[in-house]
Image (tube, helix red, strand yellow):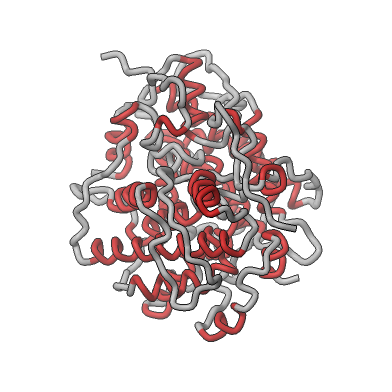
Length: 251
Length: 251
C-alpha cells in the first residue's frame, strides 16, 4: 500500500483522487532524502534525559530533545544525524514562539520519531504517528515532570502537575498555578527543562521498543473517530457551557 | 551577541548561567549544518500557493508548504533544499497527528522560515521568530482561505471564517460550524488545502521582503509581556468565566 493510499484511507475521502496526473505534470517526486529515515541504535533513556536537561539552556523545549538524540546517534552512526539543522527548531519553544500552542517538547519529539521511523510501510502501522500521538496522550495524563536530574538547576522541591492537555499554555499554566512561580522564574524554566527531559526519556523508551519490534501499543486517542474533529480529549476544559457537535457525513 | 545571550535576554532570566562549563564537558557543539541557513531566491507567491494546493493531497497541511517552497528552491539553488526530508513533516497534520493543536500550515511555515533565515544575528531582530509569530497573528485575524485556486477541487462557493486562534481545532471548528461540512468531507479538505496555500502565499511574501531587506513589521503579539504566560491573544475563547492572572516576578 502506497503512502498516498494509506492517507486516503485514514482521511476516509476520495479527495484529490484525480490529482495523480497533475502531480506527474508538475514533476512531483519524493524529496525524502535517501538518508532519511536512517539507521537507529538503542539509546539510554536516562542519559538522553540528562543530556536534554543539560543543553536546555541553549536549545529550550523546541530543540533540546532533537539535539540530545541526534547528537548521540551522530556519534554512533554519523550522517544524516550530524548535519541535521537542530538549531532551526529552537523557535518551536513556548508552544511555537511563545504562543502557548503545542508544547515544544511534544512537537520536536514527534518530528524526531518521524525522521527516524519514516513513512508507513505496507501492512504495518504508522509507527511514527502512533508513537507521537501516544506520547501526547501520556504527556497529558502524567504528573510531570517525572525526570529528576542528578544536578538540579534550582533547589526547589519540584511541584508536579497533570496538564490534561498537550498545549504549552495549559501545561505551564497549571504548573504556575500550583507552584506560584511566574513564567520568567528560574524555577519555571527548570520545570520545563525537566519536562523536556521527561519527554526525551519516554521517547527513547518508545524508539528502543520500536527498534526491537516490540512497540505494540494501540492508539490511545482518535479524535476524528471520537468527536469528529481534530481535538484533544478534554472537551470541557474550554467548552465550559456546551460542547458543540461536529457536522457528520451523510450516510 | 551570541545566540545563547540573545535567548537569555529574551527569556529575561539568568537560568543556566553556570551551564557553559558543563556544556563544554559534554561536548556541546553547534550541529547546525554549514548548509543551513541557505541562500534564498525570491519566489512567486501565487505559483507557490498553486503548488501547495496541487500537492496537498499527498503532503497535507503538515508538509505541503515545505514541499512547495523547497521544491522550487531545490530547482533554483540545489542543496540543502533537495535532500531535506519533507515527508517526515506530514505528521504535523491536523494540529499534530489529529490532536487539533497548532495548525500544520503554521507549524511547517515557521520551520521553513527558521531553516531559511537561521538564528538571530548580532544587533538584528530575530527575523525567523518575528515572521513566524506575525504569520500566526495574521492567520488568526484573517478571513481564510484567501487563496482561490485556478482549478478548484470542489465546486462549492468556499465559506471564509476568521479563526481568532492558531489552533487547528478552532480554525477547522469555526469553518465547520459556518459551512456545515464535516471533517472528512471533500469540502473541508479543500478548505484546508486552500488555507495551506493561503499561508504559503503569505509566507513567500514575507520571505521575499526579508530577502530584500524590506521586512520591518513589529511583533504583533507578545504574550509574555501582555499576559505573563505563553498564550494566544483571545483569552475569553476558553476562559469563559474568569481569566486567571499569571504569577508575577517579585521586583
